[in-house]
Length: 104
Image (cartoon, rainbow, N blue to C red):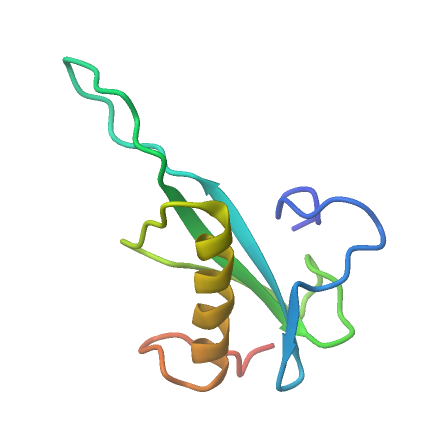
């Protein structure tokens, strides 16, 4: 997976955060609600994922994985970024059931 596919552009992108030997890159995107009729005005909510890679490795390398936060919406980009980084830290700490960084 390339950096462009991860939504991380440029060659000099530093990680948003580093934590216990891992680099964290939050990915935030507009929530796309299921289309229904009659159409309603979309809310201003955002979804997020976090890219976790071993420190010193670039996103998209074999030492990278994308973790999506399921069923979580944020009202703005800043809270979504912070939530994604916190989720990444929780994964690294082994607090998220079914998720691990052991293979990285």
